[in-house]
Image (cartoon, rainbow over all chains, first blue to last red; front, side, top):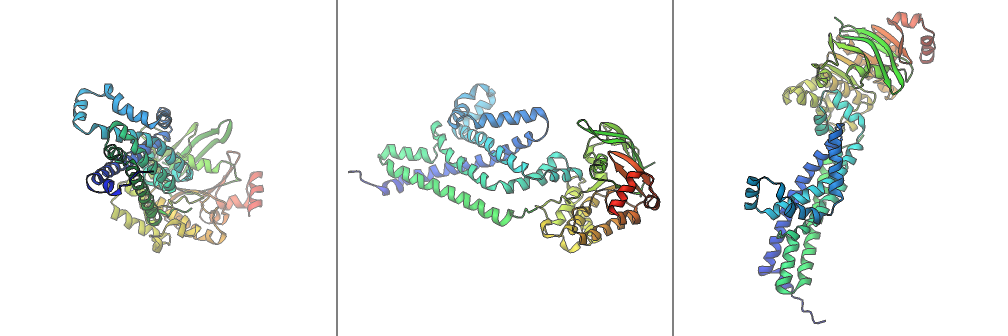
Length: 233
Length: 242
């Protein structure tokens, strides 16, 4: 084997900067998608529990559709396929923005929210029905009861599966390289193309992904332990 | 005008009729005790009054207003009628104080400081002023139930419903809850209590009704109810529990 390892080339200077740039885009796209998918997932779940049939069906269709199609197809759809449905003025505005990034966030958000919705639903179903009854009996509306009584308890229960969803999302964000978002994997690929040092480039990106995941799950677990674990029946 | 007027109430769960032609009139300040064997429809009956249960036939009026009329918002109705459950049903993720202030702040839009002052007064009244910052799981059953009563009172309801409030409690905690209820009754609260505590019934009830099979079989002031019950089912029931 006469492959010459050159870590210094990949980790410092211009290429090192590329990795950092990629890391920054990965963090941005992941953070935005996590926030949006939590919000969207919550809305989808609450629709499912309204006992209004059309809303329930809409929510069910949403989860089944987006859970059961490949993420890459969804990314391509939002990037290449959604164009004909957008109104003209919005399209013009959109093309002045970073459209690859936006399509990536939308795809990751929608895809992940379908899974998160199911986790939240499982959490809600594990809360005794008497909690909803007691809060409605005191005059709270359905949405108020959800917001102040049911969801805060449900979220505490589903912290572990939620962490898995977030980690999946962070790793899945590498797929937006297929539409040219310059995130971590894209940058590693670029470095490989410029230097032919693919081993170092992809090892570096692998280590970075592992670090992000560990930090995220550690931070949430810590938060959970110190601030949330007070629900006991 | 009666505080609560119930006319020809009929309710079915599927084919099974749980309430059969129930008629009642409860005056302001009156304490009505509802007793009867389990499955007789007593809980279902009081849960119809704040619309936790729907009913198919009959009408219920609160101060002359039909509770099912379109202009009667169900959430507003429920601010006027407090309920205390057998299992307390406190919110485990909130402190005692927040359990009591949640509905006043969110539903009645009372200012936080004001809601907290009221809550502390009520907690004082039920004897747990010093536990306001604890979580429900840190309290005994009797204390939790007293918090539940304070939570219901915080909405300043016109009527209080009690659905077997002492049935889930250890014997030594029953009295601390009953004493709070007696105080309430003395202060003139209109109360409908489903309970098996016959000592309480004898002492504070204005009227006792006995239900079986979804019907009201007997209705009398306590003295008469205990001394000479007319219906044979009532006699058998009283023999069992006294």
